[in-house]
Length: 297
Image (cartoon, rainbow, N blue to C red; front, side, top):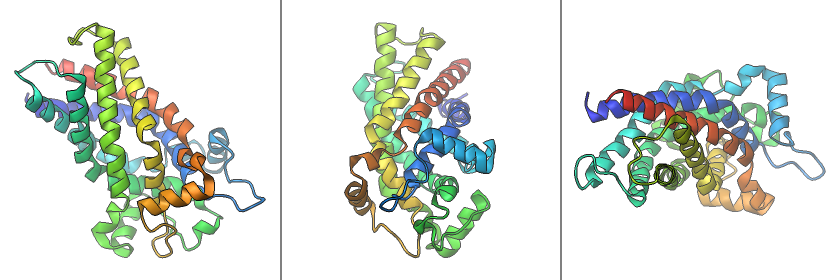
């Protein structure tokens, strides 16, 4: 079984584990990110993460926490195939000889390259997911005027292709997606390798147990969001922005308006759920990836 096929298989298993563990947290993150700033004297729709969970379950049941999961689940194989295969091929290119361990700096380069490649798949997937997740947060607000109500992932895709500029509309938010995925994956894979080497006491990390992989994977996932969270907020608000009556003209405009109206705090809306999600979800992802990759030889 070739290295590309092994990375594809292991990446798919890891991505599925990550998605199942982390999607409810991601739903709450997007709801908090996309809720409009309240008018003077009014309270926000959600007072915090716990309130968003309670309101979501009350209005939509527990299934509401998994809204928008269809799009990433349908593409999890392709997404992780690209991420882990590009990373694996860059590792092979940077190795001085077959099987030689890579330095932390080399893993950072591999992560950045993988992040660049995967952005072009992540952007349309995220747009569909965010539109579905954010519907209830935007409902009843001024921002929802003229907003389209979607029946599912395919309904979002069809609407965008028909009414928002065709295929180009699916790549709305590509710039902040790149600004999230490139440095985010560079940080994540760099931290993952650094922690593995630290826990192994050297560059040979092949003997690490499951507990060590869980710790390294969880903390590496946390480093992703710690490094790039404001760009994720910008991406989310752009992707759910009304196409016919946009509030933001671009990434920088969104950044400035959020900062002006809500301060730095506005760039970290939903940060708690994102971090709460990243540790168990990425721990599951890396553990599943490493175990599957190892079992394939």
